[in-house]
Length: 190
Length: 185
Image 1 (tube, rainbow over the protein chains, first blue to last red):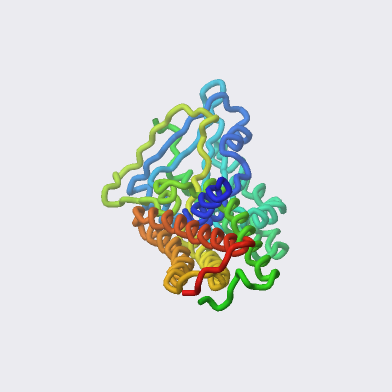
Image 2: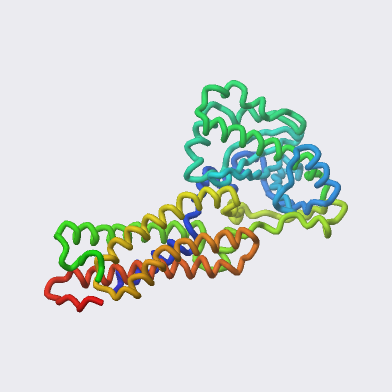
């Protein structure tokens, strides 16, 4: 009877919510924040509720509307209280599940670190192939207004179709992240 | 009567039917773990996986952005929330509805060999196909913003479980030696 009960629960679960494509955490948020803000002694979460003006600016700059009315930035402060960097996580949806890119901005506003932090079971191998060529490093130094597709340059043609597609989506996510950071993050905000 | 009798079928037919059902149950155990991990088993969690986020309410949006800053404990930073967007649900639907249909068809083959009354056999066949379809109907209705239909998806899961267990129970009974067949309906 125990077996029957177990099977009943399992079979119910089968239909409880279909079979969502499982996400795969490649780098935990906390680890990404800690590793890419090495000089930080304390951390803060800044939540920006987007207003009409900034929403219009985001749309104009990137032809993109954020899904969430609240954007979140993770700040690291050094010993003197100065901000050593800001981290954000930008998600982009694919037919094979969402991909999330972690971006760290240095005090000057340029990208200091970039990594794919979350993929799915299906997209993980494509993400790994796309990033193995050093794609994420080529985003370092970029600022809002830079063409993130230039990071694809040397990898284009050498990747398979799906890794290439994923690389392009990653570049799009980075571009959106740049716009979100430049539009919404203000050092002096309370 | 059915199209064949599982009780009187060749040993290989019995073996195939029983192993199919047992391995299907084996797969269901992992399906349970997968769904429990990624989608949840309660109506609220299932709905939060499929119902689209409220999005931007531009009618009530302030003109200026507003920021709040608070200390952060890195030990409590949440990971990305797992959701299923429309494109992903299309992807899931196209493969899973087909697989559900194939499983229902295979269960039907087993049912045809059971000594069930015709009305009951037909009911079970409809359930076998119907619950799989209703599972994804619930998911799509949630995707259209009707979160209450998480119950439809969950109840469909229970329905599939019920069909599976009835077929498994009846098959094992039919295969056990020493039982006499019921009269045909």
